[in-house]
Image (tube, one colour):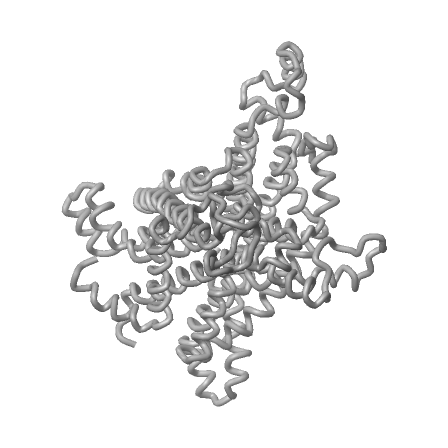
Length: 314
Length: 283
């Protein structure tokens, strides 16, 4: 087991290095930081001095090594606009994003698992088709359009929920207040997650329903409820674990857009404003962080899979 | 696909009545988009009358803030959105298929290099990569096509690779190798035709996702640039509260069109998956 985990960890290292290289190349494609930080009035000699000062006159691979060294010490560079350290900006904005992502993931599962199981159990009946079609519609609605519809309905027409921010301005922000702000963005992200998940859960339960041990369980006469919830669902949990791991990048991408629509003060919001302002250190810092998080999530999924599934070979 | 195997596929596809309806709707929408210059009553970028007027007999979906006919714009918007979706799908499928074929067939270090590159690209959240690329390059119709096409291939590459790996062990490929057939022949004439079905199904979902992504990007102002209409940038105006509440004809049609278009593509893709699966005999 330990050997398996170690092997996975070692395999992740080249991928991680590759991620930093892609990140670095993208940042260099974006243009010279000197042009972006200074106005057009700067003379060439001053620019050259700056370049020497920041080591930009060195070959690209030397710059990369230096940049990587800084990253390993936790220094992601400084924003072109606010001159704050990027790592500090990320730390102060990560909690709202994690809250949004976590609650959406949970909501997505709470919708998808029962719906998927229901669909699989009633396979090829009208109810199943209705469920599958609904799931396709869920994943076909652009998230920002769903957000607009919700704002139109719940904020403008009914006046039930606030449409932007995380706390009511001017207040300290109680848990109930945050929850009221959270409902709509969570609903949008959770529903679009559930869309694809329903079909995934359905097909993994279907596969298990055809297994011999399920026929045995049914033959024992323990009843439909126990057969499905004890025998089928438990075994279907395995692919569902992988599904969660695969969805972290999607979830993060969705959060970027949804945070923009609802002005949710998380990483997505600062990323979008950095993209609009071409503030590349911030963009690349967030990219790097999210890629690393995805890599870790995949690693954990693999390990969890190995722990849960006794048939997997190390 | 051989002609003898074609009819059962059609028959299996037709059993999904909803998918047949979707295909029909999709064909009508595509026709309307392609024939936009013939159908549209007005030019999409020229003012035709009063500003922001509700639907009338002359402008059946009303006019926008600068007096352009919304219905005509909608037709042209479908044109650009379908073009983006289609071209992005072609590009990313081509990249994915080639990388997957090479990786799966040759194996060894080539496979390792290609697959770890795929893993790296997949680690970045897809939307984030697209947004970053959109920030680096000038936004516009063709740059969106290229960006989406060059970012969304890893799924296809993995799928094709997996398929090739299992095909490589089949007897007909083994016998080809034993007979000393050239690699090119084995790859393109034996393995590729047998992976067409899953590739086609995956391509429909890339098509659907690309249309959604174009909409999101253009909505955020980083995709297709006005005055060229696209389904996403037509929705951009809805961010303002007055438009959202008092002028639904400006944003509802584009939003509904996206949903109908993408749902139809997804349903057709799903039925196609079912119909092309050789394990599915009559059920």
